[in-house]
Length: 294
Figure 1 (cartoon, one colour):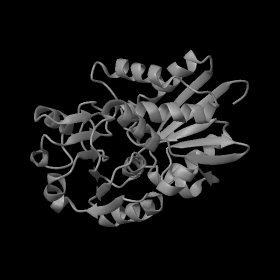
Figure 2 (spheres, rainbow, N blue to C red):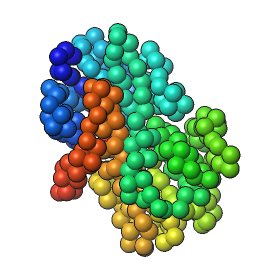
Figure 3 (cartoon, one colour):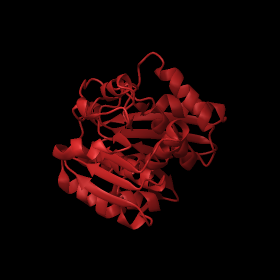
Figure 4 (cartoon, rainbow, N blue to C red):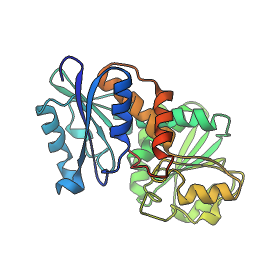
């Protein structure tokens, strides 16, 4: 990087159709920046999640300005960076790496991306009792965002109970008076959802080409609002069912846009027009063709 020229990459698995290059490069053009965004797909490169640290080191050596990190690498990279932002350290998950002064600094913009998308599209929705499905990188960010948004009771459900317990324990320090966060199991979802205000799918279930739902859809009821972090497609099978029975819904488009906007700001030091990026995201997905949720 020199003189306003930026080379940036995205590391993850199954990301060849990502919207991130288009979102970043179009907004950079609008800002008058010379900006190239490269896809570093583990599947295409024949690499695994264990190679994430090597790719980050190579990007740093080659003069990249920064990186975005997506599934399944957000947690694997944490211990291989020189420094973490407070949010990234709390969440033990990184989705943005900035190279500066010879150091690699990890940030998490997923949580603020979800919070911004929620506030934009579901700002008036009740948030006393919320269930989050998934305790991975996306689930960590969503749970953190919901606590910051003032949720009173949060239940985290994951097929890996140990992972859910670690997330809950890690978030205890950021809770305020009157907030509780607990773990649940897939087996007691019916009871958990009966009195809940909202449900967030923070797993990859429902992402193209997976036609499934992360829970039996008949567990939903019209009093719930339902959100999904997946945006390939924007209307996942879960959201389609929820909408049919009268639930308010929130797709993953807001989260992916606003996390991208904050990542671009961190990498370049220039504040983008997030609403312009949101409009661009809607244009890109208007034909039903979108991308990964990271």
